[in-house]
Length: 189
Image (tube, one colour):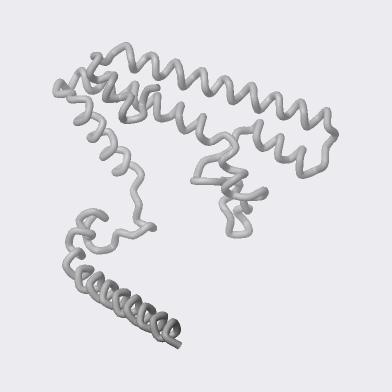
């Protein structure tokens, strides 16, 4: 009987703590509203539906510029162009397989309220990935699947080579300190 009463006491204490925490969060929520509004682009209207990828890209570039310590505008334009190439190549490498793993097999169709074949995080899978998925879905022969798999792997190697070249091109215009910062930022290996 003593254990049951101890258990109820612990449960009551946990419940009281949870209620107090929720109450404090609700009170603080009112104070954070102006800050959240500024972060979301103003007007209190900023939610997931109002995400502006261009603003996010600009903020990321500003962060890179600050972290790399680039003051000169001409120098920044050269570095920024190369960072953009690295980012694009990284997205290409990162997209492989993501569409099917994240978006399922069909990904929906435009007519059914889907995304018209877009999968994953808004990217489109490569033609090679789509061909492989189609072969798997249609129970194609092992030889056909193997050929599609080889084509996908070749395309992926090409994308990785493009990323390595973009990273090498970026590395060439950076000082040693900037290169170190770029590694810490994940731009370079």
